[in-house]
Length: 496
Image (cartoon, rainbow, N blue to C red; front, top):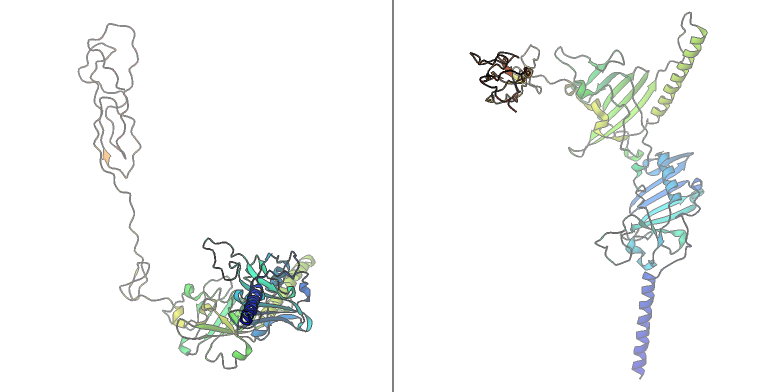
């Protein structure tokens, strides 16, 4: 009896543990009340910092000296447009349905704030003044997993939303109709990508680590599309297609900016250096460097800019007052635009940018790479021309293209008159067609002609060129004559 009682007590305890465990994993939690938006009553104007954490990746965007910056990029300016859009999307995000996922199963759907990397979600913290929490949410897995431990249906369904837990909601888990793709813990995604912009280049002076690779090119007016390569040999000519100097560093882009601790004083050692002047009086000093092995190269750039802007418009003799006013206003507008351009370009000073080789263009090309390739005697160029040493290239004319001749056709003309000749076509072979004279007698006289009568239109049809045998034409019918004695040989019926 005693043993039976002990067994019953143990069995009851096991049942209790199982029930509690099951409830922790599967009970439906409804701490938060049903509402329309995920972050209810979020005031985006109170947000002063955004922290994004995805495993060991962290990105912090915050306000410093009244400017949004990226902490992981040494305080480089952040993109205001991206910040506004992100906060606006979060404020407008609607909730979906509540899911019956207990705390014990949060790790299975990656809704934990900390702990095992395989169980933690994407953490988003919105902070206010003095880092006071405004809203905190954890982005979990895709909503294709609607029940913990059950495989995804092979027939699809779901996939357009994400499991989300807002810490203010206690134990509630939401199925939200959004993937939050714009939220990524990558600092380079949040930096301001506005950049300096070189316009109206006048001259470029490139100094390479190897002096033999250095070059200088210029043009006299900004309307010219070709630059003159200075100190060039007599047979040197610049290949403007390869060089692309007219649009060099016009609206360039960059991929990332290096933190200050990674861009020391010696980082740009052995860099190419270029001095660029423009027709507007801007002067750019640029350093460009390639690092890394083939196939994994990275390109870096620094820039410094000054400008010699005209401060006043030169007076014009005998200028009318109305003309002077108009010209002064135009000059003031242009001067303001150039000053704004200079202020924007100077924001790029003091940073090392990671670039693409395409954005650098001809800035790090050797002098030989800017010259047109020369063909040796007898060598064929790409356009099919041959070059003889000391002579200009001559491109052979292309052979004319004629249509294929048509196969001659033999035609047997029926005993009727031929049709009117088709206008001659020079591409077809010529063929002579003669009509067969009629066998009937002249109906007007009633006498048989001594020789076969010829059609009145023409005695002989001239030779014509036809693309295909022409259809025979009926002989004109003779005019009816007054009643008379029937001719000795009545005329044959006209062909149909």
